[in-house]
Length: 342
Ligand code: SAH
Ligand code: SF4
Image (cartoon, rainbow, N blue to C red; front, side, top):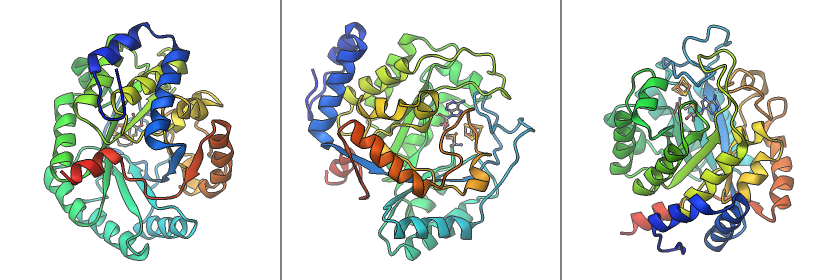
């Protein structure tokens, strides 16, 4: 059905439909360990701005939520965080934010250049800033960015357009294709448990990840935020996200997959459970404590009171609980590396 080098997606989905969660997870875990060993890559996450021009119905920092205290780190603050992270041994940073027009194409390009210089070219930079024009993606790649994260959120086109205020799934996928064409290491993924989603949607989500052969796939439970139009949506159990993680791992053995903060926020052991279902990445949040409480995409987010650097010790312990070991190296996705040598 799946080995490290060959995948039969139909057989994987047929298996998924009938397998118990325990069995599915065990199989995904075994495959993950056979490809990635027991390693879990660390990525320092910087949530640099919660200004957003978009109004996604699921998101706590959507433009219309007037209760959010907005903040924007300065480029100097972002550079300092990456320098501090580099000194602490981190070799990958994820710079994430809302679709904030202050961060123009040129400002981000300058920022990338400064980070690369100040960290001696030793770090990989992942951007997660939403949809931008192809030419902007080209500029940023040339300025030294390595990877881009942009979840497609749901593969159901109607649900996508409804939840993302008219932005089509097609446009999101076009932007992901642009990144791929331009040589980025491409990450995407989806939320699990959105209102209107079905089991078939989740299977199509996973198959879309397979078809697009994403190098990284982030999967997290949807957690309803009280100040959004989806406030009354039911909270679906973490198990659905664990099953989706295992399914994507079986379809994409080489992909890097984070044990997401949303999973850890819904369940105290959520990240351990994700790591035991095929995830191989953790993202300590090194955003300064005074602002990270304002980057609330969903409620009850964990690790808000401590520095991300302190979090690394906690993550180390959690990783050992599932017989894995954290690794500070860049951790390029093996699928992207093999594509580069083609
Ligand atoms: N603005 C960028 C990056 C920030 S949002 C973008 O939208 O791509 C990062 C991710 O947070 C989104 O892709 C979405 O999957 C997730 N997210 C948003 N609201 C959420 C919620 N209520 N519960 C769980 N995850 C959520
Ligand atoms: Fe903005 Fe991203 Fe939230 Fe949508 S999900 S409102 S684009 S931060």
